[in-house]
Length: 186
Image (cartoon, rainbow, N blue to C red; front, side, top):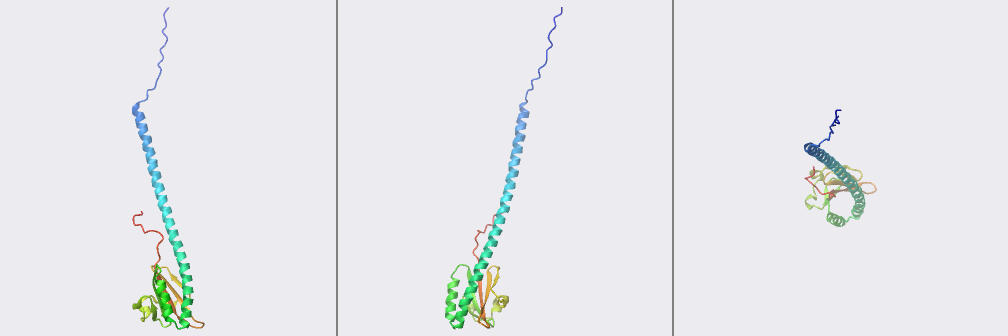
């Protein structure tokens, strides 16, 4: 009898090539780093956008609050000046002006008569000259409290008696920024 040899079956043991494992790990690391870099870029852009939105909102809120506060202040100040004018107390108005201009932001206060001449000013160089020669004339033409958000802010308030205009109060106000000025933000 012939002895049959059992058939040798080849067992396929797959050998993992270390080169392939290494390259696979490198590819996975590269993909991971690429994702992290992309995600960092997305978050940085989102942060910049949100920061800019917050700055615009803060500036708009500051402008609104400044406008409300300054308009109200001009209204009450015009009443005080009206009373002093009716009592012929120019010295009292001058004291009001000098006290007010000491506050941060108030650059100049003027009282302009009905003819357009500057009768009182915190800057004595401006007293006695025609308002329209040095300042914008539209400030004298306002019939109510006027606020212009130029830098500095321009405010005017008519000073009225019962039947006529006694003059106009003018204020130039430089707002104090609530956000620091940064030039390196991109």
